[in-house]
Image 1 (tube, rainbow, N blue to C red):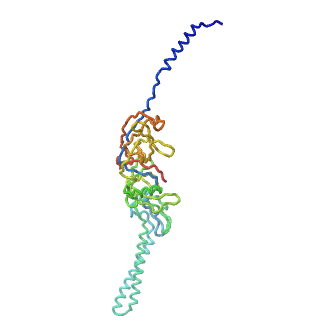
Image 2 (image 1 turned 120 degrees about the vertical axis):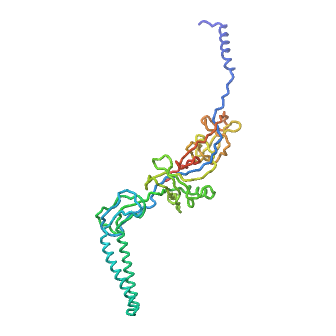
Image 3 (image 1 turned 90 degrees about the vertical axis):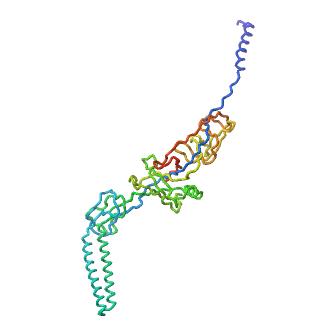
Amino acid sequence: MRAIPLTLLSAFSLMLVACSEPESQAPQQQAKPAEVDVAIPLQHKLTDWDEFTGRFEAISNVNLRARVTGYLIEKKFKDGQQVKKGDVLYVIDPRPFRYELRQIQAQYELAKKELDRAHLLRESNAISQEEVDRRFQELQITEASLNNAKLQLGFTEVTSPIDGKISDSYVDVGNMVEENQTILTRIVSTNPIHFRFEGSQGDLLKYIRLDRAGQRPSSDSSPNPIYIKLMDEDKFYHEGTMHFVDNVVDSATGTIQATATVNNDEGIIYPGLFGRARLLGRANYDAVLVPENAINTDQDKKFVYLIDENNAIKRQYVTVGNLLENDLIVVSTGLTGNEKVVVNGIQRIQASGQEVTPNVVELEWKPINVLGKQASEQTTNTTNTDKE
């Protein structure tokens, strides 16, 4: 093997040292703090609307029965039509009742003449006072029978007891119907209409405490507004007022029954339909709002990131309320409205105390109309609690 000259080894070593020195002497660059968007929470006056699911019911629901026994000779309505109170719907053969009325009418006329004759005879002491009293009693009995016969004849025309929508006929013409037994058809009132739903005992306690604090009157004493939408509607167009709250909480379900009265001038709502309702909750209060994406979750706790005067990250736990349809969420507790909240770039935050570069942005209130044509811009969203 040939030996490598010493001068060549020395030169090679000097080259290696020269190449390595600039790298070791290069200054290290410091990482720039992460950029995040921060904003002051928005403050706005709001009204809360709590959401429930329920079913419409007719205020009046009548099973129409025959009130006399006889043969059905005429039907005077079209199946499914709207009827008015007093409209004649069926006719039961009136002839037997007319004959009976004539007979009792004759008996009444005779009893009346007998009483008049008794008064004349009594003036001459031809009969006793007891005989006059007996004939007066006979006249009263006959008069009662006459009135009953007139009533029975009137019942041969079966009339509608309410305004509403009629079903089809359960009995065809020609059949015998029995007094107080045969159901002829059903009529339900449609305008106004009831909306029945259930609230939890938590809802009940909340409303009681709001009433005590003067922030919302109780539906027991005030017709609080309610808005309802049907399954094919995107807004809560149907306006109503609270009508009734039950006096007990169901021990099996922990819920309480409530009913609202809803206008149905257009006739769209049928008894039995389901609907989603928004009931007035807390009214006209000052709310602190942040974007929904500013809210973070730590197990069962909610928090937001704040930055202090040194641009360091701080975690602040909060309680959140309603989520609005303009993607803002109500912060019930934890914020005063003067903090700098991180609203964008949360994924760049590693831990509390981290220094960041804040980019200040301004939150904007976008008008919302969550109820429909009746609502104002200041109404808000709901507490999303579905209840059958």
